[in-house]
Length: 205
Image 1: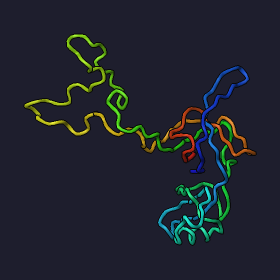
Image 2 (image 1 turned 45 degrees about the vertical axis):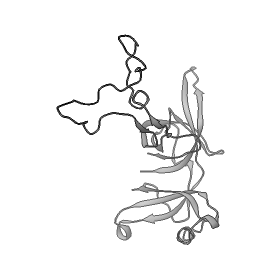
Image 3 (image 1 turned 60 degrees about the horizontal axis):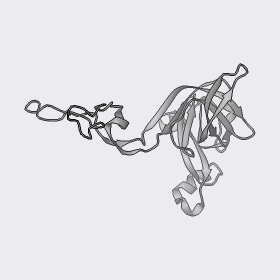
Image 4 (image 1 turned 180 degrees about the vertical axis):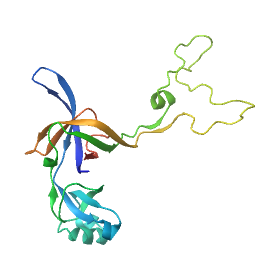
């Protein structure tokens, strides 16, 4: 595996030479610092820890300051571990956007937008009653029956009902790297990426 931490900027479109339009998500990928290298001998598994975003020293704990000092870098805001990293890096070195090429197939992990408490139509795609005829009054977005009466005399676990929506960790697969702007640290990925603008995402291959 190889991967990097980025920040979602927004969406745009790219037009090919034949006029075909592709919706893309812009991700800003600043150079990631290698802050820890885990091996089978020392930790029981192989992984590389990457970090981005400087944190003010007054906002960092002593443990964080000492941990990042080993990599000769100030404390960082966002830290992510990538298992079985395929790129050989030493402590304190940086990983840049150049690990990807245009046309690569990638996966993007992010946290979806929080929607708060939502009903069944928005949360699960229920169609609702549809028409307000036959005595239906303000029932267009109601869930309908949720369980039996005398049997089973309860509501089954897992029943799709209203509740908190969003804020879930989601992995989007099968996306492609459309274009890379190395001088601006921008990468354009086809399709949508989970999360709001400014959220942290993981790009991995």
